[in-house]
Length: 343
Image 1 (tube, rainbow, N blue to C red):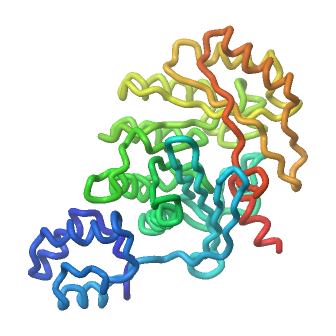
Image 2: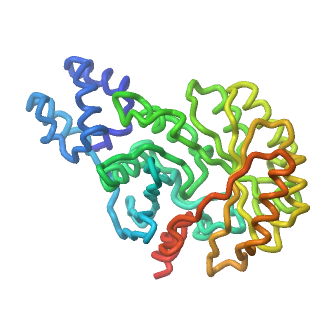
Image 3: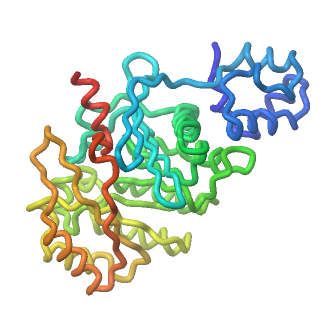
């Protein structure tokens, strides 16, 4: 049965070549063809001997995604909907800004964590993506970005990266390695809903990747209503894990905070948030809620947004308002997949 060759790390590919009685250095050549030149067939690997190319073709294939739909925003954002085997669908997004091109990657088909404000879990959870499928997303985005350039990768698409830990970390190592995509670790971000065991595992990796945590509320009652995962990993335990992470890695944590009208955007909530984060090396990304017609939540008013931000700043919390991207193409997590499935 054929496998996607991107399931193999560089070392695993070297070991396979040794089993085939081939020189190990061919592994670097193969990696270069896949991750740097972006070829889609083994026949294109012209510096490999024909018998080796045929051997690779007999055992592997190179790409596993089928494009179903592509949308382009007026701000340059591009969103893609892919089909995997069967009826499984997954999304990925290119977000160009001045001086950088970010790929937003999904790690699961659907999501099992059922955040109340998010479209990702509305169709339920199907399965986790393989390492190769994750890398297929990244390579597709790279090949469809301007000048085939991808400077940053964020695991902020559909699914919970730390619920697919091994495949995500393996993909990140290939994205990061100079023989692979050669994207610096500090330009790679994992976003989690707060899976404490995963955060603890991350702190022990020899990777200087960025950690982003979806917080969205400063108290357990509000956060549990928005994010059921909080019942398993409440704020006190989560923030304790964050302090340990910072101590162990000496890295700053980013907290994502989606402002939802009448739910979590009051000035009092901002004061509570400042107290919660006191003494922690962190910053807060304030996000304006992207309304989903199937849900009753709405974005805050402009004054609510500014008062919230100003309260945090006056309380000593480093924060920014994240600019909305792709609003005209339903670029928020899970929206395109939801629309396609319903259609």
